[in-house]
Length: 158
Image (cartoon, rainbow, N blue to C red; front, side, top):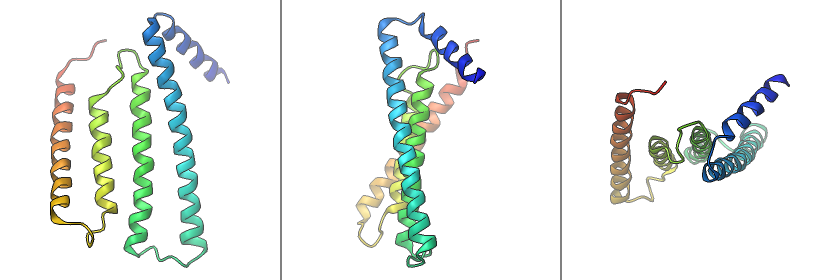
């Protein structure tokens, strides 16, 4: 209980020197974080129920079946993407965090493409679409590498 009170004091202390617009951004980010947290909790609950009742207890669905594998891991990646998005919002609440974190946005896009590759039905997907996804993944990987290299070369304040 003491730790929560200390955190609330720290948030209030960080909130005081902010401009009106920075306070607005901060409140919006906190609201979005809360909403994303609710979505993540609901997604994990739904995923847990689907795995428990659909795979474990019913025994009617074969987990070795590729379509089941795709569906389960697609849902897991959806939760991971939401968590990464929430994390990027929390970073934005830190002093000097800025609202848009380029590396986080690129990472989220890369995770979304990885999810698409996992759930992709190769029998129904044509070669140009696979090539386009591969090109997008490669491009985002290069951009992420460049952003990380830039961030590591910039000296940290403090």
